[in-house]
Length: 180
Image (cartoon, rainbow, N blue to C red):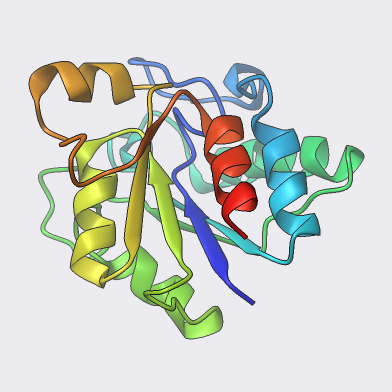
């Protein structure tokens, strides 16, 4: 089965400059959960690769992160969808780790369970770090303008010439499924 790797904050749910620190702060972007259901129904493994530096900053703990993810999974389950794997980086940005995007540790962990085929795998993110991570791993990348995506385009950190750009995850999903 082909795999789609999604960043979490800014792609699936609304992002916050103050971090998503509690399940009540996790709010799905309209259409994102339905897009995941459509990907599931079309035979894609859907995985999440997310930097969660709030852990390293002491803003929340692992139990709270698990509750946030459980809320996401529960809301998705209610409409018939699921996420196959969630990989997260718990480190502070100042720590030198292999997992914090744009490093490829999260994708390597996903690749162990869901082989990332360069011809069929996409990573969808809202930052240049997501795009760089995908390219370093040898898979395709798409940018969504939700979350930080709009700002990334204005800064010029992502090129429209080399990276397909979409309004949101739902538009990416429409485009992808229309191609196959």
